[in-house]
Amino acid sequence: MKNYIGISLDTSGSMRGIALDAGRDYNAQIEAIKEGSTEFNIDTIVSVVHCGVGYRATVERVVTNSAVNAVKPLLDGAYVADGNATPLFQSIEELINIMESVPDANEPDVSFVLQIITDGGENVYDARQIKKVTDKMAKLMHTDRWTFSFRVPRGYSRHLTQYGIPAGNILEWDQTSKGVQTATAATKSAYRGFYAARAAGATSTDKFYTDLSTTKLSEVKATLVDISKQVDVYVVEPKNDDVQIRDFVIAQGVNFTKGCAFYELSKTETVQDYKQIAVRDKNSGAVYSGFGARDLLGLPHTGDAKVAPGAHGQYEIFIQSTSVNRKLKKGTNIMIWVGATV
Image (cartoon, rainbow, N blue to C red; front, top):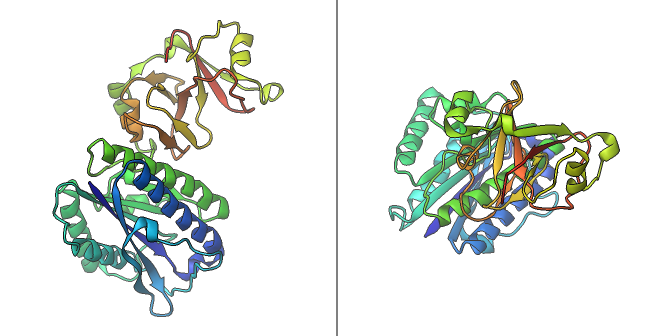
């Protein structure tokens, strides 16, 4: 089993204001890939290209088919954003060329992941050139061994889905320091989930990111069970900030049992495979749960998975707590499901 991972980093001039954060984000990605490769014992080879370098806005190879453990982190200030344009699809084409040239490219137990990061859109290739690349991408995705994932500005995902990129493989992010940090957490979680899925036999994914923003309510209803009448949802008031979860449940007049309380996903969490997950529709207040919740979120069914808040649209995500002393934060929601077990 082997993974080839290619990363396209936007080095156009518009990235200059967040270049420091972008460099740290890149380091966090490499570290997440190293961790996944080691934990799941999957040989991983990494390639990196810079998208839009200098006045001519060229695509340049900076890492070519290197063992992930040999890839060195960037020093602060080493991420240079000086490009005059964003040749986005040319960078994808370059990564495809690198990966298709490896001797085991056609082996069934070899998979490929391309991570494309940009703060803008394609402004070099014309429609004909873009179609050539996207047709190639579609052909590769059809093999079920190639995954194309994108981090793009808000609103840009619709341009990618029309090319056949699965919505679950697209993360829209804000071009701010905080936006980069949020995207970093989501991407680290995505890599962890992908490696767990690979270890379980998957060779590609159409839900690289835990994202429900494009999931229709009809799909949620068809996949999960409506448990609305079995649960109660409470807001943690300021006076209860940092209260232990067991004490909070008891204060609601409920007999606390291990697994009866679910916390709202408000920061990156490690979710064990035995924990139940619930999805709440913010519009109606209806709550749904079931084994298929992991499929909707693109999480593996075995092993631990780091889950970031992500972009979940009209839904709130609740994770079962198996702790008695987890501290709750004011303003978050707690769901109590009497009878839920671990």
